Image (cartoon, rainbow, N blue to C red; front, side, top):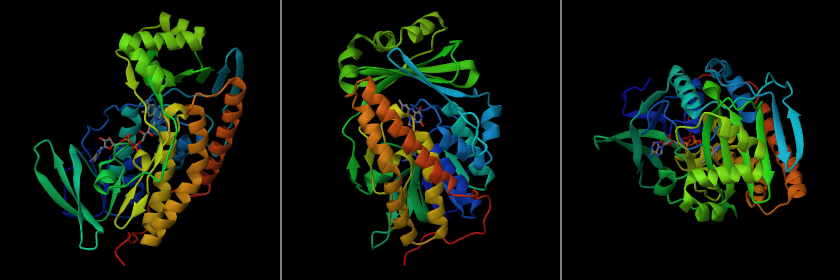
Length: 397
Ligand SMILES: Cc1cc2nc3c(=O)[nH]c(=O)nc-3n(C[C@H](O)[C@H](O)[C@H](O)COP(=O)(O)OP(=O)(O)OC[C@H]3O[C@@H](n4cnc5c(N)ncnc54)[C@H](O)[C@@H]3O)c2cc1C
């Protein structure tokens, strides 16, 4: 699916071709813009992330006509979510609404590939093996394009009216623009995860105990992702004895049932670990540039909402770009900040691990309210962009 660079000028260049970048590229190309999306990684490669989609994320895939491809990939259908607070269990069935009656947690090797293929089908030039290494700016400082480079270190200049950084937490675009966070979370959790076969569990399971949380996420290939999350300090203190020992210790501490199932199951190839990073909100747009996905807004993974957020914000940003003009992008930033602040705050409270069972239950009710508000925001987008006439992207006024 990767194409070579076909032109030296596009309407929009996007750095990063995963859930934020590929979906933005798809939506802008469907809107009639000439889009180039580049990513140094391979199409369909994995990334450090578990991959539980919430209702808002599945709704986006449904609205964009991509949910069938997720189902066809063999991603297991998730019909309920079960919360375990110590010995208490709360089961929430997934109700049918807006054409979504089950959730999915496709592996990133699957989801990101579906999104880049959809971007290419919509007419975007998708180029893997190239990264944005610098920005081109005019005398006023407005971004006018990007310099790209790959393994051969040859640098190519490509002009564009807008460069979008969808390049993840450590966004190079944000670094080049010297963007400071406008908000930073107070806490960060670490996690360790792996994939197991035949656990015999149905749906998502989230388990909580004082100072730790574990969970199971059914995915492709009959496998279930099992994660263990903890405050960063516990991770730093425990990792010296090995990831595996710490992982199994946490599983045993939080859920003896899940620990038993994992012990009986066929083991993972390897465990993966995330040492944690505090959430942040960076500016979302400026003259000739914008950020989307983790590059602009990252919240702790403990509430499993980053992909859902990226799929929603890619459409809000795309609408602003298609509307055209710097004012539309400024309005996008204001609306993004308002949309995400509730989820950002409640995620930070949960990520603090400074709660008892009653308190975390109340925080989860607040989380559910925020998630419902975000689903309503997604629903308010109405019909998805599927091929509107070409519109003018933001140009210098
Ligand atoms: C341990 C962990 C567990 C998580 N679990 C969940 C979960 O269960 N559910 C959920 O919804 N979210 C989860 N998340 C969050 C989720 O992974 C992120 O929110 C999501 O990946 C953000 O997508 P993105 O497209 O913005 O960035 P990324 O997925 O990080 O992709 C960024 C891309 O940009 C590319 N790139 C980097 N630099 C450049 C450059 N200079 N030029 C071009 N391309 C570049 C990279 O190669 C990469 O492919 C988890 C995160 C972690 C760390």
